[in-house]
Image 1 (tube, helix red, strand yellow):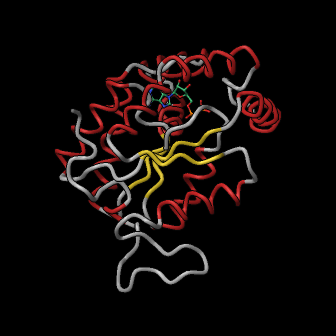
Image 2 (cartoon, rainbow, N blue to C red):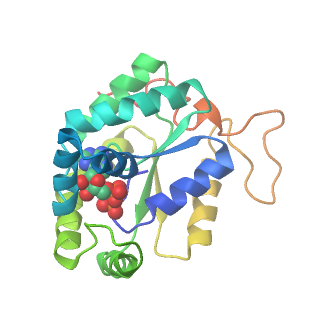
Image 3 (cartoon, rainbow, N blue to C red):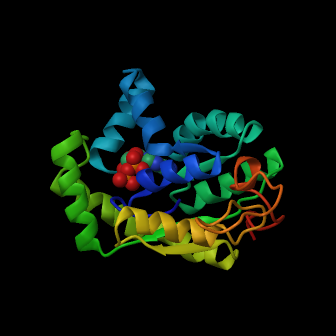
Length: 218
Ligand code: ADP
């Protein structure tokens, strides 16, 4: 799932995981958990997160690869917040190749910046994340625009970009994503429509896998 802060990656990622049976792997959550251990690595992560900068790629990979590898051996995964720059995208493609998988869809949640800022400021009053402060929110949006946004054309060129309007009520966003993913081979049924007979749905290895080649760097 590829989206600016506040677009709803976490909410939609959890819903998609419940719908598909795949595991929701949220990069930000795993990094926050590591930060809370208070280790030297954790302190470095916490500093990056508090300032709204990206955590160095090698740390991200060290934290995520075990979770991705384990999920790949079970029911597959929905990656939320990874990759976030081009070198992570290349690393993700290489990892997929190593695991015998290819990325099946890059779900891009789009919403106007004013909507994102309003959502993040509202969330700040509820869950007290260190990076949900006005100046850090601005910086996170800038990092997204300057770095992560480049992944939109990257995945469009690879033919796996699924763009969804995230400036709608959460249920409508979920329905749109499900409708789009339902058209992929081996996908679960759209609500109210019969699924693909006998197929175990997008669950499992199908979520980020499927067609050969798509996820590999060109
Ligand atoms: P949001 O998308 O709202 O910023 P996340 O929980 O996805 O929330 O990310 C919070 C922070 O965690 C980021 O600002 C960054 O510091 C760190 N982070 C998450 N994913 C990555 C990643 N793939 N690469 C580097 N840093 C990351």
